[in-house]
Image (cartoon, rainbow, N blue to C red):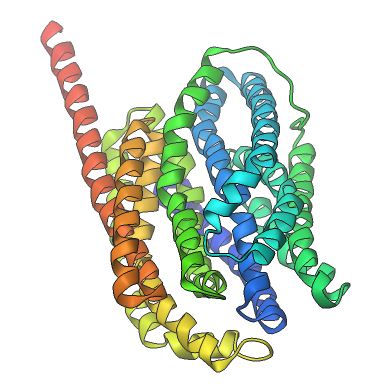
Length: 454
């Protein structure tokens, strides 16, 4: 056991097992919450409005989260070379910038909602759009709470305190169910939006408690635009492009689903309810566990070691996800019927959701590998690669959505998503391998130069 914890792959594996176990517990609670929501709301207009109201806050939240990914490699580098005090100052300055950015984005969303929401919900009736607008303003607090939670989780993960960050999201499903149960009638859709915000606040409180227990101040303080802070901010824009690469398709897909009739957005979200846990439990657990290791190997210019770790987990992901994807597609409809059918969720709803879900399951191998490569590229601080990938991904997604919607209807949007992830996987792998070859060639030339001078 001690030998396992001392090796690079052993540390990653130990962290991965712990994070996966805790994330699985959180997902059990989240799935129970979704089963409860399905029986209360079914797949109708109210849930359509709720999901579209969340689109912009959640989408911008993914982009803000990129600050945490850009922050971790620099934070670890400063902590390794200059000590805890210097690393704490970097954290405080980045937190101050994060607060200003979150307030600015929230104000921007509030001002532009009257123009943006009719575009996103282009297929909604005036009454449905009015409900969407009310839920949207109620959900704006989600952006602020999630933005702070992201950075605080990043600090704990960088210090390899993974348990608390993996368990904190359990507050979200618990609070949502409590708030909905405490209300009744048509107000329950507002309770769902309020509970989503309060659940994220609860997660933030737990994460903040974890930082304070470890003597890490959480009040933002600006120490100036130092070199490390400039490095984080310089990397944030390209990492944000990577976040858009993996999340803009959600915004595009759900916006285009509003054109396909009542309940289409809700059906698309239900179809993701079993896909998302698989991605978050396995893929995000691996990305969280492996980013500190990738960052250390990159900071120490251990390119051979980085490639070895990368190859190990590429093979492992392929070995697990390919047979898993096949089995999930075969049992798609029984899974949906088991978890969601009942109450307001009809047999017809279950059949359509299962068809959409089957198309989404196809993305599992490609999404998993793409996330691994995004993590490696982030640790190498070559995030401009992700910016080009974003352009390719969005363009392909819009084109395929229009094409497949005409042929398959709503399941065509899901099939388009899986095809986009295949394209993203191929692009990211090619660029990552090219980057590693460049680093290894540079190291070889340096070694030859030193040998020649000696």
